[in-house]
Image (cartoon, rainbow, N blue to C red; front, side, top):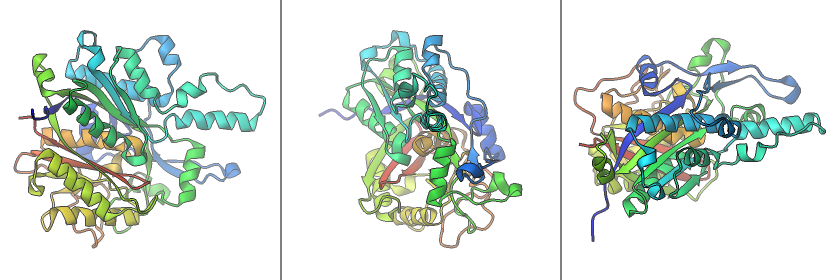
Length: 412
């Protein structure tokens, strides 16, 4: 039986609150620049003032006007990130075997902002016309469909909507698809765009959003800090071009990294409380899939949402897998917020970039680390290790109990 082919990353693209494009992301990481800001509430609807990490200007997409008219904020960010990745990969989509080119995507809530706006219009003025394209703009498969349409990709299309694990699972399942031989190239990623009044109000009702004062808004998301008070919603998109190594070599592409390991488990214990055992099992599965030992991992991009319970449980699970000497671990959500279904893709892109640049991202705003979190959390500033970074892990843990872990390593 032949060994499964290696799968390599040949292109990445990002749209986020801390920048659009890999260079902008790197600059923000190096400066620990926060994309979090405060928004006013609405007393009439019971919406308290809140924090979010928005994409300030959604980039313009290269698509026909008719297609652009069918796209909302989520789809436009997704297509722009895909175009960045395809451009970096120098992928000639017209020259592909399009029947063997897949699109796998992850999103938690799809076009939530468009749906929120439609409900507001309908409830405020019942006779007001609802936009005819509301359905096609809000469906969770819209970004994947638009990417496939734009480039004529006729292979498998799969959309994962599994809360905060969505895009990490999309990447892992695309890895399995390419290893199986059912496709040889895939455009894979995830996105979220849910900073809308009704959605924010629902999260406020859960009591998990960060508390803040006006003077500390940008630094209010504080993963692993003793004074952490909750998460900050973010938005954006991240996309990868994944290829079998043989496909990449045939066309002379330069791999950025190998997507080497994927582990996925379910806690099966609670809808919203994390479970250290389930998380640890996912990490161990990812290590086994990559053929690595715990000591081979040089950096972990933690799920690290800055909730009191979540950060502590994740620290326990990392310790259970890595023992007394876990690798440096940080949460970049302090800067770009929590993209929910898009988080895994963005954080894997940041992790791969950390490996390429040998610059470990910081956990910003970490002033007083929780003593129960016994990890090297890279406080405040990015770190340049004295030796190259060979392998990185990215954790995504979701409501519903789904845990998805990805490992990338140097392609050479």
